[in-house]
Length: 354
Image 1: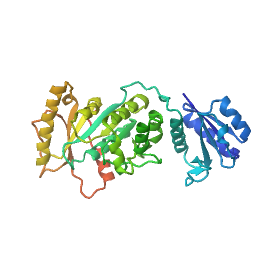
Image 2 (image 1 turned 45 degrees about the vertical axis):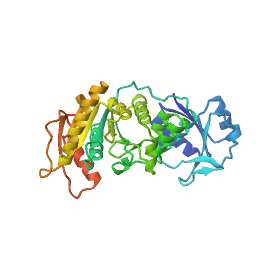
Image 3 (image 1 turned 90 degrees about the horizontal axis):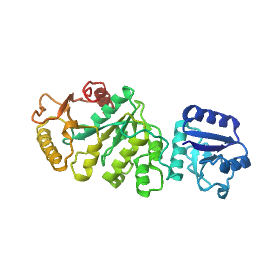
Image 4 (image 1 turned 180 degrees about the horizontal axis):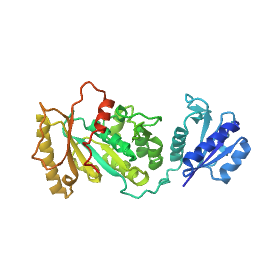
């Protein structure tokens, strides 16, 4: 399915460049129509069944003349302009990728019945869940490093932080104005298409890792139920084309959270090897065995132990748990989060994760 887009602008040169850019990048996803005449554009909207209509503010658009399911926005010259004549606005002078994502967001809102533009079969993405055994073990840092390593191997990789107070933006940066709050709104309101919203909201780091910025207000994350998280994950697996999805999760064996752990292909428990962490790891391991017996689900056979921030002075490996060892990561002193992630990404500690 292609999104049909009509652009009305008096600048013929700009229209030519925009149509060429979309033809080069999104010919499989969009069908573009360009106009310099208002009447010709309006005639096309119904005939061609246009999905999104963009018009320069030079043209005063009668909204009643637009088809009911046709999304509309003014195509403006400044990113600081959010609305024109009470209608949404998109800045025309930005990268084609960002324009496409905003168009996709509008389309998602006006086509909630659409199930998605891709048909990737379920089960193609491998899902790796990172879970901290104890506070301060550096589970998020390890997850971000693994995501960067997979991306460097040419794997299309998504990092998804589902912690209540986690923040993907600590490790990654990308262009775009959306964050997980937009996804949460779609889930709760049911007024938009989730698959399209996920595609329009995702950002990409310079390392190649895709990610979602966490909400500005952390409390928004608490609106997400475990069912919501699983729905997001399943939607990504079915409709997106990621090779790897890295989940950054809090450790919990509550019943409603087990479905996420069951859905993951690999569970990576992160410990710093300290006395407290070893005690907690032993308890986690015993709890996991009980859960397997009571619920007839199998977690241990896909579980690994990763020792992070390991110190020869204060850390020890716990050899009484039957979890596949990945190895150890030393402490990095006087380094930024980005520097630590890059250092870990270059190590061979993740080689056992296929």
